[in-house]
Image (cartoon, rainbow, N blue to C red; front, top):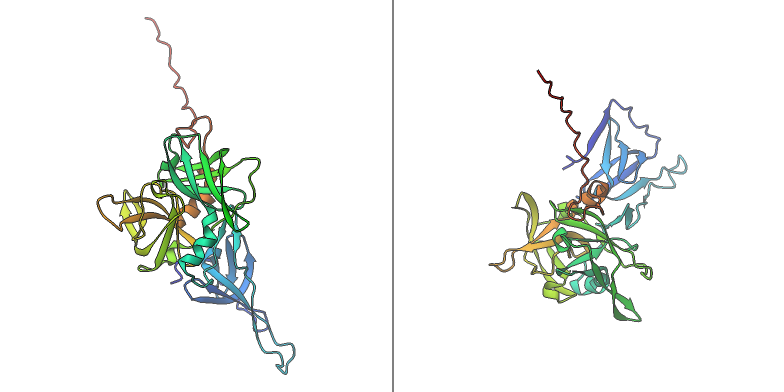
Length: 324
């Protein structure tokens, strides 16, 4: 259950009974109690008495502190205080809160629809979703493959109505053709702060859990389809995908697959054409890896067909031919 914890050291001294202890409540409903030694952006270091553990922050739902009694008489009993915020910014994207209650698709669509966009190129169209208010968005690599002229259609909420706006200054920041992901950014001067999505945890999904997709199948923007997770580890073309019964069609590519807490758990990218209810999505854990290592996938503007820049190989020194 705790196989993702990294043992940092052994032989650490036992906690004093008088010291203040904290409890990490994990997303799998387990908990760890000890003394927090350090808190970093993506991990927490905790001393549990006989060793030190490094816990990824995305596995922690909240932190509770044990407050010691104010006096020896024990008039002030130990109490628990939540200290973790509901939505923690993690670099370029925002991590969702697994403690939020599930809601209906109808409620969530009204909240999330503004952050789902249509991505257009001269060769076709797809979908995408905004991951922060500065205009960064995720789509599929195959939606923009071999294209540099990209526009993004966004529906802004204004006075209770949806107002369609097209942004044409769209920059490619990073691409990974092997996982079919692309990071774009809207850079129009008149662009406002954008509504955004939060990224969830695809590892915590359960088979049979309800999910829904928002996208532009066949150009029909803001189309919502609902289904369940059929399997979490469907092998396709050397990668593992989420399989879902939510209807996925051409134009959905690059759009988000949401859980019922409104968190993105996958990026829809393909379907089996001769069947129904056989859609596939890239797990959001792959998206977070792509974003956290985006510098390694940085787009090279000097070579639009290739996301990588290669150094020229060294020239072999040719010995002159001696005449005899």
